[in-house]
Image (cartoon, rainbow over all chains, first blue to last red; front, side, top):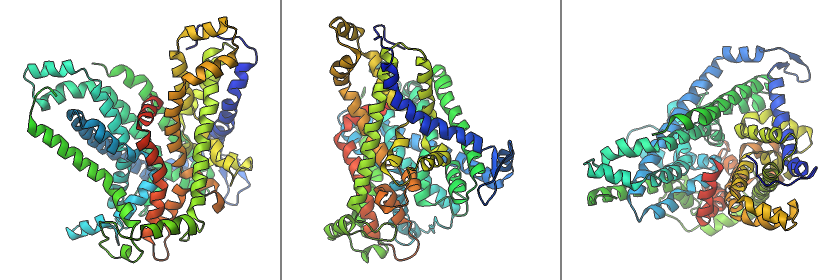
Length: 293
Length: 282
């Protein structure tokens, strides 16, 4: 954790650390403390007066059906984004790994969606699926599916999932490809000599060896779906129609800034923080140890 | 591959090409929309091939401005994005490389306390503590300013960890030799460690530039004056204007401009990008 040969200096290390610690305290510990403190306060709607109400804000949340709805939306959304995103990128990575010469070329063409901002990805998908002029909405109508994500909640969910998967696919692809390329070729050759075909080799040799990468990506993608997709939701559906695509992170923002319910929003922040910390903990503790072959 | 089965190779290429087309399609449609005039883009089905109005559209968006969400010429908005992206990535790299240097090369009281203080920030991106962070920035009077856009986003531990990881892999002999030759800590850092970190810095630069450029929620919250809008945010706002006839050609031109710089960086600095991505998340 530290170098054997170190320097001795009384003040220098503190000076070197000062900028980062200052930024961390001002923009991290102070607001996080405020979030916890505010989650225990109830502010009246005229602002100004606030009372200490213990866990009333949390109770209020759990009684609130829209919060349960947002929880459910988040679960569905994260499950679909992680599941579909991982499956598609694994397929592409396995195929790219097969083509010996092509893989670098394909890589170049698959990495760039990562650079597109989620909010811009939302604009792109919103345009393609726009009920009036969108080319894909037009095609869907032509084959008899009436597409209008501004009215149909399920379609809105499909749309945000598609945009989120698209945005994240290059990340998953790169990690899967790196994982595949680090599997020793001798193992695969040995399996082939024993008579295992490509499909069988994939499920009995490659897939288990890839599972650490897969679990890592599962956690990263879940966290991405929980937090990173705010821009997609905001520029595509704004949580609508109704509240059918309102996920937790969007509700934190919506209740806090639109609804001016600071206590409720802070309580939601605290819950969301707890979820993220739990996932990070799982990632560090559980996965890195359990998945070994 | 271990065996030669031509049809499998053909299938692999076919799936990959289909994947490529699927992934490229949204961007292709955006590009096509940015090359037509407004009337064409209002008639469904919209064309699938580029038109002839590309220069007009880009000129209008860059130098004249359009729509209700932001009337300013968008090159100024893009400058804001550039300032923000560079500020975030240079700021992050600068404060975290010296912090990492302090925790790996010095022994001092509370070293681990500081280390953990930085470590916990890993877990909480700005989205989850958005309301109180806004409150803090407002209390400091930094709404509608570049420092308000940049400073809260440079509080992150990823870069510190990356540099710490790298410093730990630097041979011990270097620091010993430097000390024997009479170099002080600052000289060692400046003349030896910093030049050695070039590749890490480049990798991090790419990742953090994209991160800074693509910020959406934060600029959306703390800017109310158009002079501080960013391109990602205006592109999304223009697309969501409810009343009036949407000028899809111009909206999608703004979309192209919003994604072009980071996409170019990823394509042309691919090696650094991949390295940064893999390093930053480990």
